[in-house]
Image 1 (tube, rainbow, N blue to C red):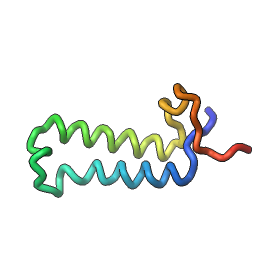
Image 2: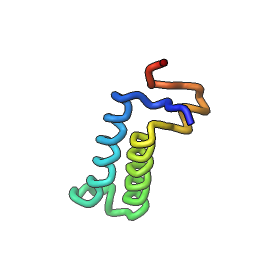
Image 3: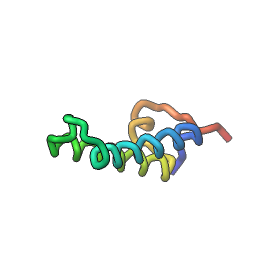
Image 4: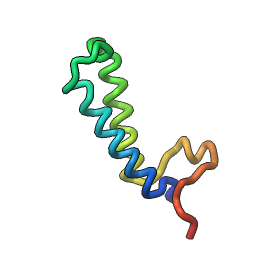
Length: 71
């Protein structure tokens, strides 16, 4: 599998993913009173963390994009 997520993109994905995992449980925002939004936030956070760790994003592949440096 070829990598298509570069280092700056990975850092942003992991940080944003961690925030999406934590925010529903530590804030009292009215948005997260609905369990559907909690699940959406958690799933999006997990996807962002996973794609940041494995350095591959299927959406980038479909759109023929890459933020990784060329060899």
